[in-house]
Amino acid sequence: MLRRFFLASLLAAGTAPSAAQQRRPQKELLLVGVATALFDSGFARHIQRALARDTGLAIEVVPGASGKLLDLLERGELDVALTHAPEIEAGLVQQGLLHDRRLVAANDFVLAGPVVSQGKDRGKDALGLAGSADAAAALALIASAGAQGRARYVSSVDRSGAQLKEAALFKAAGVVPQGGWFLKSGGGMGEALAQAAAQGAYVLVDRGTWSASRQRGPLGVLVQGDPRLADSYHAMRSFRSNHPAAKLFLNWLTGPTGRRAVNRAPGGFRSRAA
Image (cartoon, rainbow, N blue to C red; front, side, top):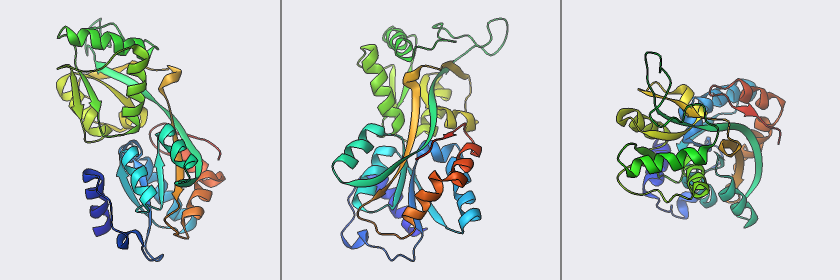
């Protein structure tokens, strides 16, 4: 438990651990970093239980933003990480800093925002985005309305997969998000969603977190189905960790039993073979 609090402080502060802290005896639990989307949706807990039931292997789950988890993995402070930051992951593998990267699951993002809850206009929104499948065009409309004081948007600025996806979509829309309409949240996807619900703002959220949340307030899903909203999760190992259970875990996760567990996890995740 103490190690978990230590890692949580690292994720918050971004500090580098000492060389002495990078070596842990193999008898300790396998440390598995998971993107907040996997934690908030209940996916990580489901996989943790299925793994223990099928193999007897115990893991310690460390939630955090994908970018921060990958930093810790590269340093050897995590044994395995499950993240959804494909460009960063691929770059670290190409540099020889991480290895054994495997595609584990797929899901998608949705754009949510304030909708009418009653009457003949139920499910509709002020900007007319409901039912759209063009996420970039929707963000352009939100930005335009925001500049006029008619809309607000909450962004996860924590180096998460959501932030990376959002940045790519704003770029595709030709928009530089800034100003009073662009609100920042650094506490993970669940917190960003809760903030958007509290302030009646728009937000890009992964489907797993959306499905699990009970803090949606006046929000509804407005934009979905855009291929650019696809979300993929990879697992990979650290070169600086030699925990004997790391490869066993990945073999189980990407094998037949693990893939069935992924498909049964909450949040609508779909298994992908290694």
